[in-house]
Amino acid sequence: MKSRNIWTLLIMIMACFPTVGLAREKMVIRFESPDAEVTDRYLSSEADVAAFKPGQYLDVVVTSQEYEQLLTQDRKFRVIQTESTQKSNLKVAGYRNYAEITAELQALAQKYPLLCRIIDIGDSQGKIYSDAGKYNYDAMKHDIWAVKVSNHVDTTEDEPAVYFMGGHHAREPIGVEVTMAILNYFLDHYESDETVRQYLNNTEIWFVPLVNPDGHQVVLDEIDVWWRKNIRDNNENDRYDRRLISHNGYGVDGVDLNRNYNFEWGVSDTSPFPRSLIYGGPAGGSEPEVQAVQSLMEYRKFIAGISYHSYGELVLYPYGYATDAYAPDSNAMSALAADMAKSIPGIAGGNYLFEPGWALYPCSGTTDDFSYGNYGTFAYTIELATQFIPPADQVQQICQDNLQGALVVMDRLNRAMLTGHVTDDTAGLPITAEVFIKGIDDSPIYRTPYTSEPLFGRYYRLLLPGTYQVTFSKTGYVSVSYDTIVINPDNPTLLDIKLQQI
Image (spheres, helix red, strand yellow):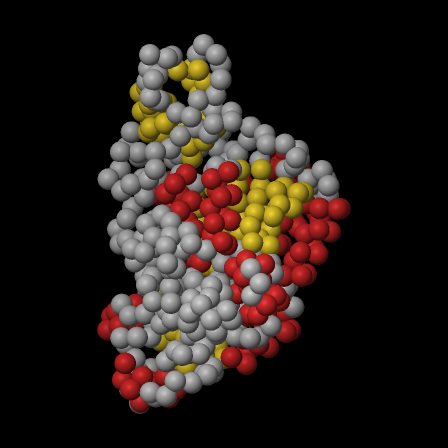
C-alpha cells in the first residue's frame, strides 16, 4: 500500500536527531478512528502510510526515535507491528524465495507441459548491474518470470487474456504467495474441475509471480524487512545502500516500481527525490522490472487483471492518479470490484471493501492506471491481509480466500460483454479499428481509444447490461454505427464487423 517518507510532518523530530546514522528499528503504529487533522497531516506529507481506512484506522511506519517523539505529542495510537514480528513471520510462514519460486515454476512446466509455459520477460536491475561487471550485485542476478497457462499453451489463440501478478513491493511477499496459489490451483484442477477446464480452454491466463525479485531478496534475507523499492543504484556508487545517508531510515537507492509506470507518471503521491520511499524514478518506465511488465501488456492485450499488494483488505480499480478521476469504464469496473470484494472474507470477519484508487489516496505511475489507460484492461489492485507480512496461520487462508476473487474475474468473461471481429470486407483480413461506445468513450477523463487487436481483429468490451450506441471506425474505411446494441447480463453479445475501404 501507500508509503511516504516523513519530511514535512516530522521536521521537529529530524531536528532532535540530526546525526546521520545506519539502520533504525521501525514499527507500525495505528491511529484508531483518526480525526481529520491527523489524517490530513499524514496523507498530505510523505509519511510512510502502511494502510488507511477512512474513519476506521490509519497505520504509519515510524522509526523508534520517531515513536518516542510522538509519545510526547499526546496522540492516541498503538504499536501493531514490529521489526521482530516481521522477521518472525518470515521465518515461520516459509515465504518462497526466488530460487524456490524458479524451481517450482520449472517443476510445474514439467508436470503440465501441455498447459504451462515459463517465459523470461526481462532482467532485474541487479542482474543488469552484475552482467555489467558490478560484482556487488552478483547475488541478485534475477530474471522476471512470466507463466502462460492455456490448453494450447504454445499457440496464440483467438481468446481473451487475463493476468495475475505479485511482488511489486519488496515488503509485501503475501502477494507472491497468492499469485502462486492461483497458478497451482488452475493447473492442479484442470483435469478434475470442469469450470477450471473451461477457463483454460477458452482463456490465456498469465502469471507474473514476482515483479521485484531483487527487493524481495532484500526482505526475505532480512537485510531490511521494511524495504519497498527495487535496488536501482541512485547514487551510482556500484553497491546497494539500504539506509545510509538518510535521516529517517530509508536508503538512497531504489525506485518504487508501482510509481514508475509511464501513464500519468509523476502526477501525484510520488517523489522526485531518490531517498523517498515513493521515488518514481528518473523517468516513467525507467526500471527494467516495469519495462518487462509493460512489454507483456503491449504484447498481449489483456481484458482484465489483478496485481496483489498488502495490506488493507481492499479492492482498488482505476483511476488512481488524481482525485475524482472517474475512468470512462468506472461503472462497469466498480461492479466487478464489488463482486470480487464481497467474495473475499477478511481475516477478522466481514469482507473486503472496494473503491477507485484515488478515493483511498491519489497516486500515479501505477500498474492499474497503465494497463487500463493504455489498453482498456479492467485492472485491479487487491490489498491483501491486515499487515505487510502475515503470520503462518493466516497465509493459507488468505490465499484460499483470494482465490475466490480470481474466480469472480474469470467468470466475468462469460457475460455482459460485447465482442466480435473487425475485418476488411474485401480481403477478410483483421483490422485494428476503434470501438467507440457512446456514454463511455466520450468521457472527459482520458483513456487511449479502445481498439480491436491486430492478429485476429478481435475486440472485447466488458459492459453493464443495457442498450448501447457503438461505432466502429478506422482511417481509410467507412465507419459503421449501431444504435441499439443490447448487452444482457448472462451471455456475451457477439457482433462481427466488416469495414469497407473508402
